[in-house]
Image (tube, rainbow, N blue to C red; front, side, top):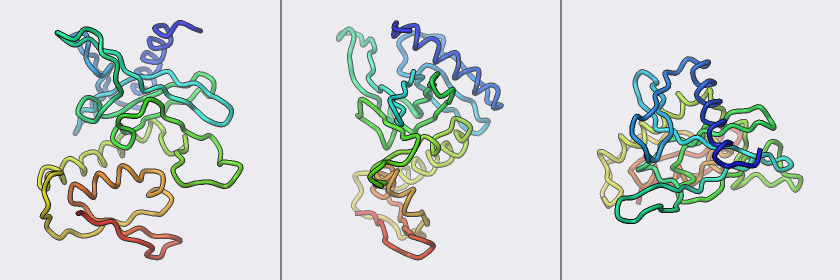
Amino acid sequence: MDDPNLKGNVAELAIATEAARLGMSVLKPLTEHERYDLVFDLGHRLLRVQCKWASRKGQVVVISCRASYHSPGRGYVRSSYMPADVDVIAAYCSQTASFYAIPVGPFAGQTQIHLRLSPARNGQRAALHFAQDYPLGAVAQLAERLDGIEEARGSNPLSSTHTAATAAETVGAHEFRNLFGWYMQRAAAGERFLVTRRGRPFARLLPP
């Protein structure tokens, strides 16, 4: 299957079907040229979802995040995805028969997302993202994290230099490494984190 448009259509239909099987209500925008393809209704939250076809290359699932959309006055614009436009990138990989849901925040501005199916041979773990950590079925938990980020930004804007003292959230070192950019954004919004390693305090991440 070489036609990008056909791949996109297949991915969107497959993701919508899988989301419905998982119990989510799936909505489709009536207007054209939206930055997202679908909306997942989780009951307490609506998520704007961009659907992508993923390809397997060895032990890595590659998801292209290049976007092309129509803008009045500018014609077709090529860019990547940002949290202001899309909440989640959902991907379907026919080679692994798997579905993934990735928050846009940690990957904002990137043109590709790489998800590893197995650990790197050299033992590297920092800055790597593993496919098993982003199943489509965990999108409800993903929405809860997105809610936390938005609540923090609502009370402590990113431009603010003064933040009220808040209790630190505990996060394991493995998750912290994999989602470093995401936790950086949350810290900039006023949240505090205690990073643990093997159950013991290892580091703190604080707001500026």
